[in-house]
Amino acid sequence: MANILFKKSYLHKTLKETEYRSLWHSHGIFTTMRVVGKPFKILFFKEHIKNFNKSLKDYKINNKNTKKTVLRLIKSHLNKKKKYNHLLRIASNNKIISISLRKKVKTKLNFKIKFVNYARIKPEYKNLKYKKILNFLKKIDMQNSDIALKYNNKILETGTSNILFVKKKIIYSPINKFYKGTTLSFFEKKLKKIKKKDIFISSLNAYEEIILVGSGKGVTSVKYIEKPYWRRKSLRTYRLLLKIYKQAVTKCPPYYG
Image 1 (cartoon, one colour):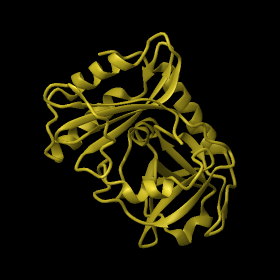
Image 2 (image 1 turned 45 degrees about the vertical axis):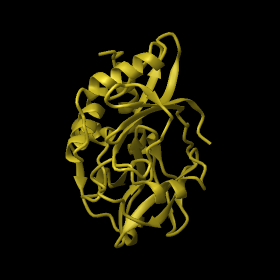
Image 3 (image 1 turned 30 degrees about the vertical axis):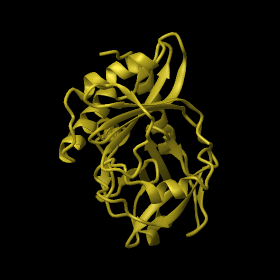
Image 4 (image 1 turned 90 degrees about the vertical axis):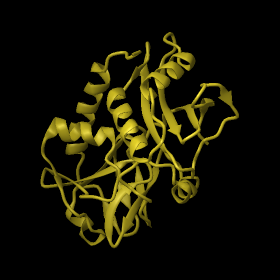
C-alpha cells in the first residue's frame, strides 16, 4: 500500500475543496513529480507543467491558469521545513483537480519485470485510463518489480516508467506507442545518443542492460525477467545514468513560482 501523506480534490472554477476523487478511469490527464530535499525541490517542474497543459489542451479540458493553480495547491500542502523524498500526483478532468502526495518507494538491485500483453489507450498521453494497469500493479511489490507492456511482440513501456535497452554501449528506446516522460526527455537532451528502435521480445537476449527511468523509479536497473528468460549482464550504463540523474536532483533549485 502506498504511504499517502495527503489527498485533496478541488473544483476547477472556485478551487473550493470537495470530496476526494483520484479521477482514475475518467476523461482526464495526470502527472507525477518527484519532491525531494529540505527545503523541497520539484524535479523537472516546468517540464511536467508544460506537458500537463499540452495534454489538457489536446483533451479539450479547461487548463486556464493550471500552473498558477498547481503552485497554489503546492504552497498550501508542502512544508519548506520538512525533508521530502515523495511523489506528487496532479490529476485533472473537466470539473475537478486532485492532488496527492506519497512516499517514494526505493527500488532494489534485484528488480524484475513481468510482461503483460497490453497497450494503453492513447499511450502518447498520460491519461487516466489506467484501470487494467492498476489491477496488475496491485499484485506486485513495487520495490522489487514492475509490469512491462508488450503488444504485437514489441515492448512499449512499463506500468510506471519508460524503458531503455543497452547493447554494446548504445542505448535504445522504443519508437512509439508509449508516453515519453520528462525523465526520458531529460536523458535524451543530456546524452543525445539514445536511438529509437522497435524492441522485440524475441531479441531480448541481445541486450546487456534494461533500465527504467521515470519520476517514481528514478533510474532502476532490471536484474532479471523470468519469461522469457533474461539476466542482466552489466551495470555500466545504469551507473552512468544514475550519476547524471543524481546531479540533476542536486542542481535542481527550489521552485515556488
